[in-house]
Length: 276
Image (cartoon, rainbow, N blue to C red; front, side, top):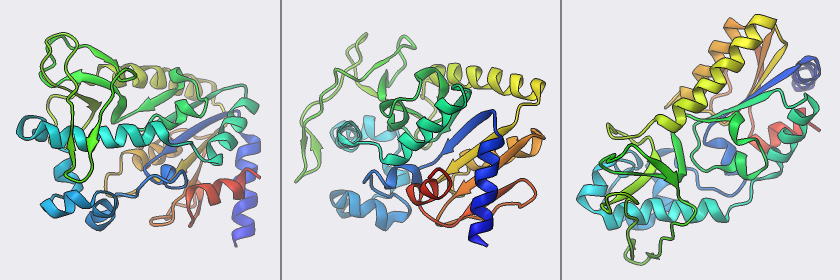
């Protein structure tokens, strides 16, 4: 059965004239990034937060920038430093080689905020970051609606007490800045940058539909708890008659076989199966 599924996926890829890569948190695990699934996974990555009894959903809430900004910037500053230091795994290169072979007729649609696709060489204008990016900043009060690069931001952290030793300030009003990431219970997120990405993506999809271009959707590590990425792939596979979906997921691999094939494994293992 596995051999047949692999051959089917390879055929989808060979026939495709365009590629959509949809990726969730599972895409980063093979690069050594922590898995935040469930409180235990989160607390293993951040034992100091376990002592506070705070869940990932609670920690990833903008209220902390008002309530305890040194804790908030310890959490997001640590993640920023971690993502800066992480090298994307070989699956990114395999996907990059694939889209180059398709005349760069592709898009990446991801819920990840780590900037790994751009770091791996994917075109900035062909990536949609639906939850924003940790590599960009905004004012917590959206004083001017500006979003700016975090490249010059440097966060030092006291890991023993899990407190930031410095805070990042808004470049305009000099009050507190925050990552341009969509958090839980977040009414202050500036979605302007992400909306521009979505507009480019929607224009691309419109062209695909109009020209009836053969599309392969490769979904890696997209879960069902926050199903944004999975829903996007399912919807396009159903509405674009020449589209096929390949799902790679070790936790929830189910797929409707009428429009795709799935592999019950991690991201890198799955990509090595179909892109070898």
